[in-house]
Length: 306
Image (cartoon, rainbow, N blue to C red; front, side, top):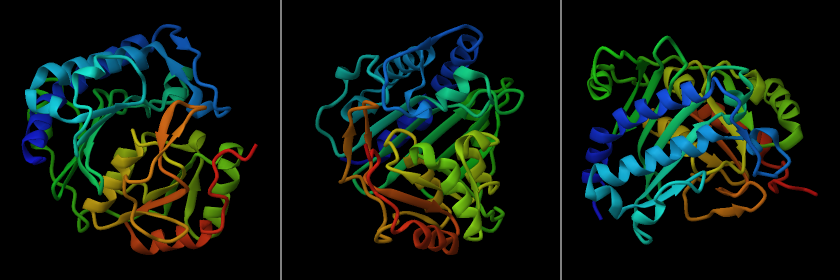
């Protein structure tokens, strides 16, 4: 199955859909919409709101109705809402959704780094990524990646979402600054401790509560250099992998330095989500990637130790 028509359909139909979804999330955030339902023991993982469910319902329905080729893909979504059965059960291509990345920050009003996310991947790598952070900036911030292109910039409601994305300049390794800042998450109660270890190793580690915004625009623009994540989920992390690979970096398993693929996944029943195994380092700068691997290669690869 060729990915080109799927990427073309996503580039045409996903931007307005994501902008609408962002507007709904921003409005719902004004109300008390917290829900229960996840019980992994980690506050970042377990956060859930009515916005997560509502935004996913919109995204799934919008993709279902946008173009028949999209329904030839499998769909993997962080929540269970929406007409997921309309999509293929067998396909080499997967559309993955994270309706509200950063739900804890979204729910608790502790920052504006939450985002609506979509990506397309096969078993080897990510082929298309789109991120919309509705409250990063006056009218939101976009990140888009496909082929050899990475774009990032402010939204402008005076033009269509597609026109806005088309107008953004391509970020290249030559135009993007490097940064030692690394995002850490997934180490349960050890996020802060592990972030300090990254800083001690010569980079600069940031635990989730220290993040100045969504990692995806920060990574694209060079304000952050990468991430170190324990058993990342497959709904949001692959976008970081995609950005890094387009810009000349990579995402690898720290224990062996091998590039991440999507053959190996496991179901985290506590959080009800699919994850990659072990600890994954992701960076644009290959030297930073090596530093992260050397630091974390002997850390415990098991997410839950109880």
